[in-house]
Image 1: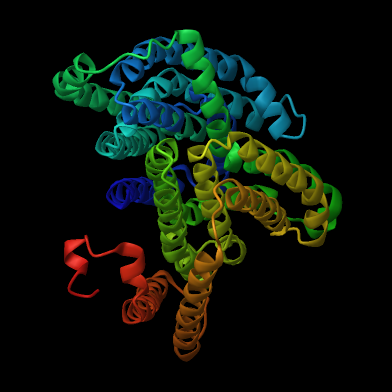
Image 2: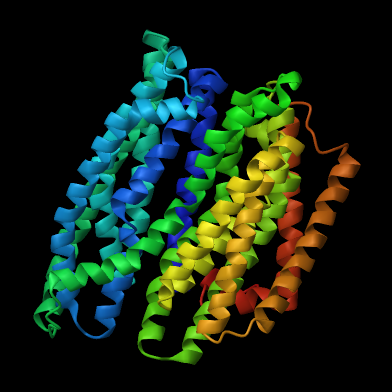
Length: 533
């Protein structure tokens, strides 16, 4: 599980990191917040429709295939894979139609009911261009899930990385050419979004190559396999039972962002019209600039969630209670070990990293301030992903939907109130409240259904928090000596960021290695770490 997690973590981290770096040249090419605003708000409906189109297929298929593989039945998984290709092609095409023809409606509700003006028409056009990617991605998701069911994370990791590289490369080159030739921000942003289709094609081609390379071995397993003769109707009923909670998890962050997208413009103008707030800048930071940075620590949890499901499913299916609890402990302490210090470090370096990556425009004060409060949310995002994945593995799918629904309801209820109290960061607090309650519900059911004792993991959390506190004090002391947390120029931001990361990372890792925490979390099977552990 740890090997698969590390493989997917590297790929997911690289993908998220490239996504973050992409914003820097993209911002420079399209010229500021207007282009980033169009890009940000067009991706939210796309991500939601994509989640509905794939119906949670990667993790659901992973769980389904893992379950039958554990029983020695490889035929059933192959049968699902063949029919699933047709189903995913159909749902992808339906998703494309929904977004293409629904673009005017999605654009209107984003702009507080407006159905005219340049921004509205630009947004409609960009959403229509982006919709073509929905034709490709669901089929790619099915293939990734099938390989993950064999606990093979390489195809997912590689295709994910290639998809991102091609998407970003094509989008930036095309946007640069368009801006040089015509200067059209709309067309440049549209070219960037069309990169999602081009990247999807590249990822799919790579997965097809993996399939043909491994097909002889997989065919051999199928030939030697018994057949439980599961009818397609029963197969899909079981798959949907698995898939719906995975859809919920995949939609979680996008639903929270959608609430912000639909309410920020309205309530900030209602409550704070006298403050002359730059609403576009706030939305661009919450949904793109700062959000890209916050999601980097979360990439670990995303990778772990993908890796943990087959292992927990196998232990649960075989009734191995002790092994099941060990897998859960590994998952929880692994994500806490990396995400807590990363989130706190990101918060303390907020102004430095924002200035370094996005430049020194008027928005650095706003962007750095939002990032400082937004960064700790990464721990909650990660916690929800991992606890939800554990619930899927022990067949408590309905709990995930319940906890997410309660969290979303709290977000909807408190977002207007918190925006009235804190116009810049109120939506972050509403998001944190929703996620925190969802996590508590998930943990309560995990403890009950898996008879999981939390005493050990609470001690781990307290120890990690103590080391993180010491790390934070070290960074605070460093910046106090150097002259503050807000840089004066990009060079200073670079130097201070490197020093802050180096000092913070050194303090945390020394404490972790000396205390034996690193050995408990990482084990001794990672060769280059053995000399330290």
